[in-house]
Amino acid sequence: MGIATLTPSQDPGNRRLHRDSDVSYDFNRTQKNKNTEYHLGQLKAKLAKYRQQLLEPATKSSKPGEGFDVMKSGDARIVMIGFPSVGKSTLLSKTTKTESATAAYEFTTLTAIPGVLEYQGTRIQLLDLPGIVEGASAGRGRGRQVVSVAKTADLVLMVLDATKSLEQRRLLEYELEAVGIRLNKKRPDVQIKKKKTGGVTINCPVELTMTDQRTLRSILQEYKIHNADVMIREDISADDFIDCVLGNRKYMNCVYAYNKIDGVSLEEVNRLAHQPHTVPISCEMDLNLDYLIERMWEQLDLLKIYTKRRGTHPDLNDPVCMRKGATIEHVCHSIHRSLAESFKYAIVWGKSSKFNPQPQKVSFTHRVANEDVVTIVA
Ligand SMILES: Nc1nc2c(ncn2[C@@H]2O[C@H](COP(=O)(O)OP(=O)(O)OP(=O)(O)O)[C@@H](O)[C@H]2O)c(=O)[nH]1
Ligand SMILES: [K+]
Ligand SMILES: [Mg+2]
Picture 1 (cartoon, rainbow, N blue to C red):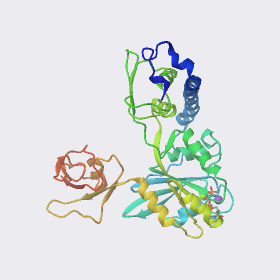
Picture 2 (picture 1 turned 60 degrees about the vertical axis):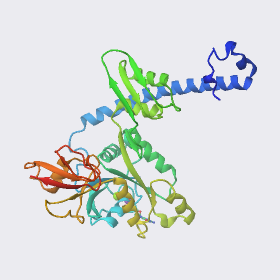
Picture 3 (picture 1 turned 120 degrees about the vertical axis):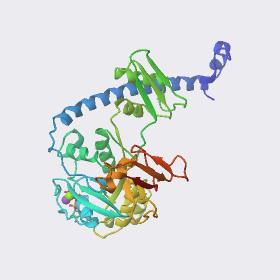
Picture 4 (picture 1 turned 45 degrees about the vertical axis):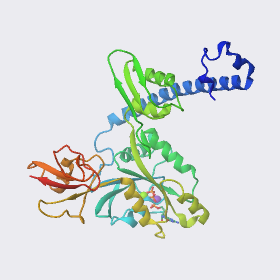
């Protein structure tokens, strides 16, 4: 039992505390941990602020055209991130009709090269990029350009060399995290509403096991937020909270592809295959590439929308693919450019219909759900 449940009225004079040395020891330790966590929380808030300042001038001064300006095309974009010579270009050449130069030396690829993956009736842009090096996010090599292109993707494909040290994955994750990308993580359920006066109120119906309100308040103070209503609906850490205060984090899905498994033991392949979001492949020997594409497609989380002309059956063979959060307006645009102009209303059947299984008449701003059937009335 936690000592915190004892109130003075339940235990006058704290007799139990004095008699039970184990408990008092625990109490001290908990107190000490709490202080450590508090100071660590403050330190992290300062660090995050400092990093942000480091990143800002570069983002502002970068002129259009300085990055890799490749037009987005197709239903979604996947960006390949990896160290030099792990096989990114080989993978692009194997899975798309685009040839990207490959060679045994590092930095063969010096710019962004787009290819198109065709899968399940969808066209997905796969972007080959230069390899990045440690310190990329701080400006080494073309690292900053590469990691900023990563932000434009719907999915990050981290390409790793199965014959190299396992450290490489953590190093790459660090580079992406440094520019505000969070991989395979949901945006924490936290709302911060700034006010003019009234101080800080923290509403938290769940128990916080990784941090406490004192730490969260000090983080707000660090960012000069002195008046705000904060609503926390899940057990977050101090880092999560800093992410929410900064508000510019990008939460992205990521698939880890370990290439060159032709050079490692079966045990190693087995171990890699059991890690979350991980697919072992060999580009050279054409191993597991189909499965990689299947897994990436799943992680893209696209919505399939079936269109139906009035008085006919829906066309189940040719869905329109949309990103999560898409509205009827997006559906119109992807059917035909001019459809949005003559739009009157739409009828939806499926999960997004308020009357499901009955249809609903909706407007431009209605959000569609996966496998909805939509009729556009123009
Ligand atoms: N053994 C083995 N070698 C591979 C495999 N895939 C690629 N390679 C080799 O790895 C080397 C680098 O491949 P690239 O595709 O140029 O690698 P990259 O990641 O695009 O490299 P940069 O553009 O320089 O960053 C080439 O010599 C490829 O032949 C594989 O599955 N197994
Ligand atoms: K190479
Ligand atoms: Mg390359």
